[in-house]
Length: 230
Image (cartoon, rainbow, N blue to C red; front, side, top):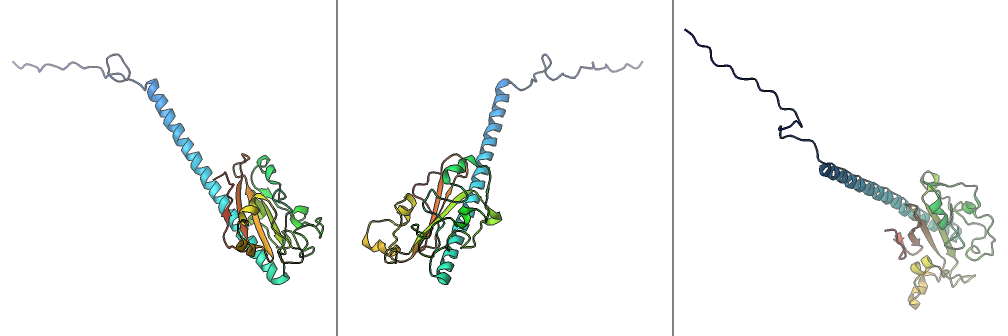
Protein backbone atom coordinates (compact mmCIF):
# COMPACT_ATOMS: atom_id res chain seq x y z
CA UNK A 1 0.00 0.00 0.00
CA UNK A 2 1.44 3.35 -1.08
CA UNK A 3 1.69 6.09 1.40
CA UNK A 4 1.39 9.75 0.34
CA UNK A 5 4.20 12.11 1.35
CA UNK A 6 3.24 14.57 4.01
CA UNK A 7 2.05 17.90 2.59
CA UNK A 8 3.75 21.12 3.62
CA UNK A 9 1.67 23.69 5.32
CA UNK A 10 1.32 26.84 3.22
CA UNK A 11 2.57 29.81 5.16
CA UNK A 12 1.26 33.31 4.42
CA UNK A 13 3.64 35.87 2.82
CA UNK A 14 4.87 38.36 5.36
CA UNK A 15 3.19 41.73 5.06
CA UNK A 16 5.44 44.84 4.92
CA UNK A 17 5.12 46.67 8.12
CA UNK A 18 2.99 43.89 9.59
CA UNK A 19 3.36 42.67 13.09
CA UNK A 20 6.34 40.37 13.44
CA UNK A 21 7.54 40.93 9.86
CA UNK A 22 10.76 42.65 10.94
CA UNK A 23 10.30 45.28 8.16
CA UNK A 24 9.21 48.89 8.79
CA UNK A 25 8.90 52.26 6.98
CA UNK A 26 11.23 55.25 7.23
CA UNK A 27 11.54 56.81 10.62
CA UNK A 28 11.08 60.53 11.22
CA UNK A 29 14.82 60.93 11.81
CA UNK A 30 15.60 59.30 8.47
CA UNK A 31 13.14 61.55 6.65
CA UNK A 32 14.59 64.63 8.32
CA UNK A 33 18.09 63.54 7.32
CA UNK A 34 17.03 63.14 3.68
CA UNK A 35 15.37 66.57 3.66
CA UNK A 36 18.48 68.13 5.19
CA UNK A 37 20.72 66.53 2.56
CA UNK A 38 18.46 67.71 -0.26
CA UNK A 39 18.48 71.21 1.22
CA UNK A 40 22.26 71.28 1.36
CA UNK A 41 22.52 70.05 -2.23
CA UNK A 42 20.05 72.71 -3.40
CA UNK A 43 21.98 75.42 -1.55
CA UNK A 44 25.27 74.34 -3.11
CA UNK A 45 23.66 74.29 -6.55
CA UNK A 46 22.29 77.82 -6.11
CA UNK A 47 25.62 79.13 -4.80
CA UNK A 48 27.47 77.54 -7.70
CA UNK A 49 25.02 78.94 -10.24
CA UNK A 50 25.20 82.42 -8.72
CA UNK A 51 28.99 82.32 -8.77
CA UNK A 52 29.04 81.26 -12.42
CA UNK A 53 26.63 84.04 -13.39
CA UNK A 54 28.67 86.59 -11.44
CA UNK A 55 31.88 85.44 -13.12
CA UNK A 56 30.23 85.73 -16.53
CA UNK A 57 29.16 89.32 -15.76
CA UNK A 58 32.65 90.11 -14.49
CA UNK A 59 34.15 88.85 -17.75
CA UNK A 60 31.78 91.13 -19.67
CA UNK A 61 32.85 94.15 -17.61
CA UNK A 62 36.54 93.45 -18.17
CA UNK A 63 35.86 93.16 -21.89
CA UNK A 64 33.91 96.43 -21.92
CA UNK A 65 36.64 98.38 -20.13
CA UNK A 66 39.30 96.91 -22.41
CA UNK A 67 37.17 97.98 -25.37
CA UNK A 68 36.79 101.50 -23.94
CA UNK A 69 40.54 101.74 -23.46
CA UNK A 70 41.18 100.80 -27.10
CA UNK A 71 38.62 103.35 -28.27
CA UNK A 72 40.11 106.10 -26.11
CA UNK A 73 43.55 105.45 -27.56
CA UNK A 74 42.07 105.42 -31.04
CA UNK A 75 40.43 108.80 -30.39
CA UNK A 76 43.73 110.19 -29.14
CA UNK A 77 45.46 108.99 -32.33
CA UNK A 78 42.86 110.55 -34.61
CA UNK A 79 41.65 113.63 -32.67
CA UNK A 80 44.51 114.33 -30.32
CA UNK A 81 42.55 114.05 -27.07
CA UNK A 82 40.72 111.64 -24.82
CA UNK A 83 36.98 111.80 -24.13
CA UNK A 84 35.23 112.10 -20.78
CA UNK A 85 31.81 110.73 -19.94
CA UNK A 86 31.67 111.70 -16.27
CA UNK A 87 32.32 114.65 -13.99
CA UNK A 88 32.77 112.36 -10.97
CA UNK A 89 32.69 108.75 -9.86
CA UNK A 90 29.03 109.03 -8.88
CA UNK A 91 28.19 110.48 -12.31
CA UNK A 92 27.88 107.28 -14.32
CA UNK A 93 25.81 105.76 -17.10
CA UNK A 94 23.27 104.17 -17.52
CA UNK A 95 22.39 104.94 -13.87
CA UNK A 96 24.13 106.30 -10.79
CA UNK A 97 25.88 103.57 -8.78
CA UNK A 98 23.46 103.82 -5.85
CA UNK A 99 20.53 103.19 -8.22
CA UNK A 100 21.83 99.78 -9.31
CA UNK A 101 20.31 98.00 -6.30
CA UNK A 102 16.80 99.05 -7.39
CA UNK A 103 17.22 97.57 -10.89
CA UNK A 104 16.52 94.03 -12.01
CA UNK A 105 18.52 92.37 -14.73
CA UNK A 106 20.56 94.23 -17.30
CA UNK A 107 19.94 97.94 -17.88
CA UNK A 108 19.22 99.19 -21.40
CA UNK A 109 21.45 101.83 -23.00
CA UNK A 110 19.99 104.46 -25.35
CA UNK A 111 21.96 106.65 -27.76
CA UNK A 112 19.53 109.53 -27.21
CA UNK A 113 20.19 109.75 -23.46
CA UNK A 114 22.07 112.82 -22.26
CA UNK A 115 24.20 110.57 -20.10
CA UNK A 116 25.30 108.70 -23.23
CA UNK A 117 26.07 111.75 -25.36
CA UNK A 118 26.92 114.30 -22.63
CA UNK A 119 25.55 117.03 -24.91
CA UNK A 120 24.52 119.11 -21.90
CA UNK A 121 28.00 119.28 -20.36
CA UNK A 122 29.57 122.71 -20.78
CA UNK A 123 32.85 122.82 -22.66
CA UNK A 124 34.46 124.69 -19.76
CA UNK A 125 33.59 122.01 -17.21
CA UNK A 126 36.70 120.40 -15.71
CA UNK A 127 37.65 117.21 -17.60
CA UNK A 128 35.47 118.35 -20.51
CA UNK A 129 37.66 121.22 -21.67
CA UNK A 130 40.24 119.53 -23.86
CA UNK A 131 38.49 118.18 -26.92
CA UNK A 132 35.64 120.68 -27.01
CA UNK A 133 32.31 118.91 -27.51
CA UNK A 134 33.80 115.54 -28.45
CA UNK A 135 32.90 113.72 -25.28
CA UNK A 136 30.56 110.96 -24.19
CA UNK A 137 30.19 107.34 -25.15
CA UNK A 138 28.92 108.42 -28.56
CA UNK A 139 32.26 110.10 -29.34
CA UNK A 140 33.87 106.73 -28.66
CA UNK A 141 31.18 104.82 -30.62
CA UNK A 142 30.94 102.48 -27.67
CA UNK A 143 28.00 100.28 -26.78
CA UNK A 144 28.17 97.20 -24.54
CA UNK A 145 27.18 93.83 -25.97
CA UNK A 146 23.44 93.68 -26.68
CA UNK A 147 23.21 97.36 -25.67
CA UNK A 148 22.75 96.49 -21.99
CA UNK A 149 24.89 96.34 -18.89
CA UNK A 150 24.74 95.17 -15.29
CA UNK A 151 27.10 97.94 -14.22
CA UNK A 152 27.46 101.71 -14.24
CA UNK A 153 30.34 103.07 -16.34
CA UNK A 154 32.33 106.28 -16.37
CA UNK A 155 35.45 107.84 -17.88
CA UNK A 156 37.28 110.89 -16.60
CA UNK A 157 40.07 112.43 -18.69
CA UNK A 158 42.28 115.50 -18.71
CA UNK A 159 44.88 117.23 -20.83
CA UNK A 160 47.62 116.64 -18.27
CA UNK A 161 49.27 118.74 -15.60
CA UNK A 162 51.64 120.12 -18.27
CA UNK A 163 48.80 120.87 -20.67
CA UNK A 164 46.81 123.98 -21.45
CA UNK A 165 44.34 123.41 -18.62
CA UNK A 166 46.72 121.77 -16.16
CA UNK A 167 44.36 118.90 -15.41
CA UNK A 168 45.33 116.62 -12.57
CA UNK A 169 43.30 113.52 -11.66
CA UNK A 170 40.44 114.27 -9.27
CA UNK A 171 40.58 113.38 -5.60
CA UNK A 172 38.13 110.47 -5.82
CA UNK A 173 38.52 106.99 -4.30
CA UNK A 174 39.16 105.14 -7.56
CA UNK A 175 41.28 107.95 -8.98
CA UNK A 176 43.47 107.73 -5.89
CA UNK A 177 43.94 104.01 -6.56
CA UNK A 178 44.71 104.52 -10.25
CA UNK A 179 47.03 107.52 -9.70
CA UNK A 180 48.69 106.95 -6.32
CA UNK A 181 50.32 110.15 -5.10
CA UNK A 182 53.33 108.85 -3.23
CA UNK A 183 56.25 109.94 -5.35
CA UNK A 184 57.40 112.52 -7.88
CA UNK A 185 58.07 109.79 -10.44
CA UNK A 186 54.35 108.99 -10.50
CA UNK A 187 53.63 112.41 -11.99
CA UNK A 188 54.46 110.88 -15.34
CA UNK A 189 51.08 109.16 -15.25
CA UNK A 190 49.28 112.48 -15.65
CA UNK A 191 51.87 114.99 -16.89
CA UNK A 192 50.34 114.59 -20.35
CA UNK A 193 46.85 113.66 -21.49
CA UNK A 194 45.39 110.97 -19.31
CA UNK A 195 42.18 109.08 -18.68
CA UNK A 196 40.86 106.41 -16.40
CA UNK A 197 37.74 104.35 -17.02
CA UNK A 198 35.82 102.62 -14.28
CA UNK A 199 32.83 100.40 -13.70
CA UNK A 200 30.81 100.06 -10.53
CA UNK A 201 28.78 96.87 -10.42
CA UNK A 202 26.16 95.43 -8.11
CA UNK A 203 25.73 91.96 -9.57
CA UNK A 204 23.69 90.67 -6.64
CA UNK A 205 21.68 93.88 -6.24
CA UNK A 206 22.56 93.96 -2.56
CA UNK A 207 24.10 97.42 -2.39
CA UNK A 208 27.67 96.07 -2.36
CA UNK A 209 29.84 97.27 -5.25
CA UNK A 210 32.35 95.47 -7.37
CA UNK A 211 34.71 98.09 -8.83
CA UNK A 212 36.93 97.84 -11.92
CA UNK A 213 39.40 100.33 -13.39
CA UNK A 214 41.75 100.81 -16.31
CA UNK A 215 43.82 103.78 -17.43
CA UNK A 216 45.83 105.22 -20.31
CA UNK A 217 49.12 103.81 -19.01
CA UNK A 218 47.91 100.22 -18.60
CA UNK A 219 46.45 97.51 -20.77
CA UNK A 220 45.03 95.67 -17.76
CA UNK A 221 41.71 95.96 -15.98
CA UNK A 222 42.11 95.96 -12.22
CA UNK A 223 39.79 95.32 -9.32
CA UNK A 224 39.38 98.31 -7.03
CA UNK A 225 41.12 98.16 -3.65
CA UNK A 226 37.86 99.16 -1.97
CA UNK A 227 35.97 96.34 -3.64
CA UNK A 228 33.94 94.31 -1.18
CA UNK A 229 32.11 92.03 -3.59
CA UNK A 230 34.77 89.45 -4.32
